[in-house]
Length: 251
Image 1 (tube, rainbow, N blue to C red):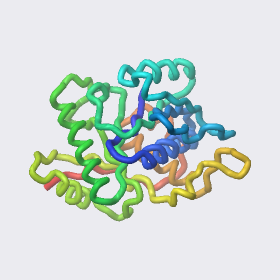
Image 2: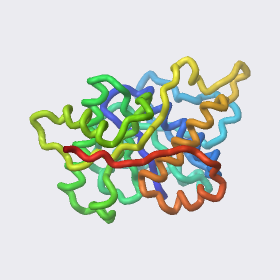
Image 3: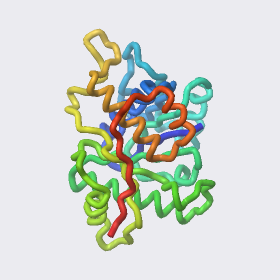
């Protein structure tokens, strides 16, 4: 079962927003995804209590030893007809156990701003280094990276070399990886107040513009992460959406 982990060592709103829009976009492509939100103490699940959510949702507390994946696996087992699996993780560094699992795709949402960019670059480097160190992945390590950067709110016109230049600066005095896997154009920026995911009646709702962004995001992630089987299924119901996927190469 292919699983998409939305991870990162800073913030949380970007991961939650992009993971929920990804789940919504997958439903538009004909899938029945399961969205699992891993919660820290004192937080409420993002769609808790909402009616008419178009995909299945669950939540897991961090006190439940998520490292073993037992509780997420249990929830997955309760929804055998749901796929793929989407997990919204809390803020933390990349966990070693995930990096070489062949069916796991790690997505690192990256907003603009020096701190956000530096954190995303560091998280990507951590994933790449652990991937090389362990060297036990069943994937073709030359063609499929362990993690992908997902720009949120970045200008649509940026080229792969632009991302490589921007990200390369954040690796100052460190070994620069050969490639920066970037999903372009990523997710457009939305005002947080426009992404409450609910209407006055407490139902899950997105605007037409948000549905379009969600569908483009879903298709782009499937393309970028080499999820061939999912892409073939999605192609049967997909409309025409402009998506660009590239790997930015450092100079």
